[in-house]
Image 1 (spheres, rainbow, N blue to C red):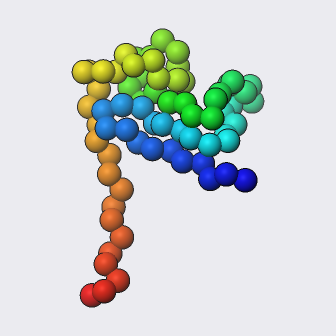
Image 2: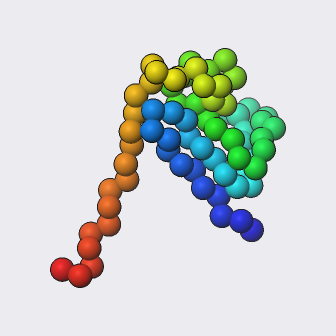
Amino acid sequence: MSKVQIKVMDNGPLRVTGPVELIDMDGNTFETKQTFSLCRCGRSLKIPFCDGTHKGTFHSCVRAEKAPDDKQ
C-alpha cells in the first residue's frame, strides 16, 4: 500500500496525495482523485474541496515542531 501524504500549504489548502477514502459524517463517500486539495478557509463553493477562493484572503503558515538534535 502506498504512503498517504497530507501537506499543509502556506496560505492555502491541505494537499492530499495517495489512496484515501474521504467520507462525510453520514458515511457517504466523496469521489476523489490520487491528489486533491481540502479547503481550510471555509470559503470554497466546493466544500470540502478547495476551489482557490482563499487566494489573497486567507493567511496561515503552519510549521511542525522540529525534532531535537540527537547530537547534543
